[in-house]
Length: 72
Image (tube, rainbow, N blue to C red):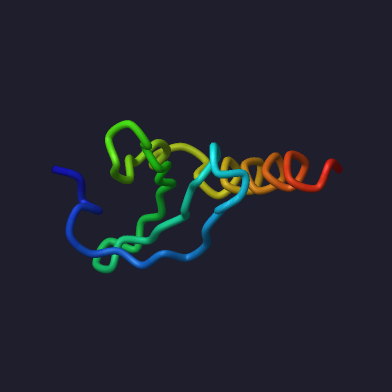
């Protein structure tokens, strides 16, 4: 079971484009951050990044979402 399975705080979300639905979370007790991606086939949030350069990957994901939505 993941350390994020019970309690966490959502820090930021990427909601558009819908195919790239993600959120940055922080464990309530551990204060570790991770990225969750919405698994539409499973119908649940899946941790996809939690160990290496989470904030850097989050920033790249936000930039890519912005390009896809706004074309720049």
